Image (cartoon, rainbow, N blue to C red; front, side, top):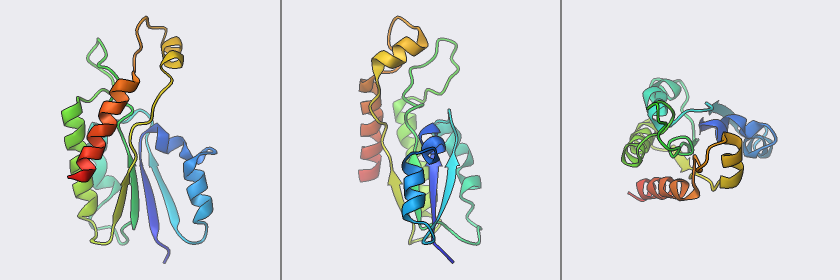
Length: 155
């Protein structure tokens, strides 16, 4: 039975098989590992935490050998004036990621986890797309969430 690699995250993961890094990974490991996509556009760490035990059940007949996790891009989006939206406060994001890591690590002593940090963005392009006067998302916020993810990984 081949090893299983699971990609778990938001749109960066969901769309990674469309000429992206997920497709490259699948190509590199063709016939060597099963690459499983669990990408959910628009999701944040809060939603992921609510389903991590369903995506990675402890009683699964086979546990993944590698899990690549990406959340943070939507979490770092500023709080919408309606109170809705994907924003998750930085401290909660870090705690959510910690709990996700703990659950995944509990599946097997051999499991490996790679966390992807929030990438930089094109603020001007996002501002033009949103039509807002001020940027709806900033590189500074992306950096803050990336640092929080890195801190969680070091702990």
